[in-house]
Length: 113
Image 1: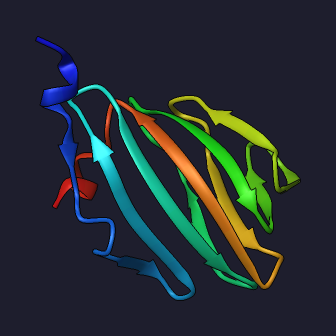
Image 2: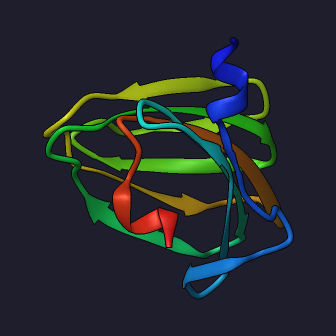
C-alpha cells in the first residue's frame, strides 16, 4: 500500500489570517511534511521568528517579498530559499500581492488545527 493514503488533505478553502494582510492555507500534511500556501499583501509583515526543529523551504509563486532577520534579501517570482532550525527570519510583502508555497519538515503542529 502506498503512503499516499496516509496524507491528510485539508480544506484549501479554510483560510487562517495570522497577521493583517497575510492569509495562510494548509494544503496537506503527513507526520513528516506540511505544505502551506500564503498570500501576502503589500506592506504586510510576518514578524521575525525562528523554528526550533523545523526546516522551512519557501518558493515565491508570484509577487515579491523582503526577507529579514539572520538572512536578508529581496525575493521575486521563481526564487526560493531554505530556513534551517534556529535561524531568525521574517518577511514583508513588497508587491501588491505575493503568493508563496512553504514546505515544513517536520510540520508546524499549531497549523494542523
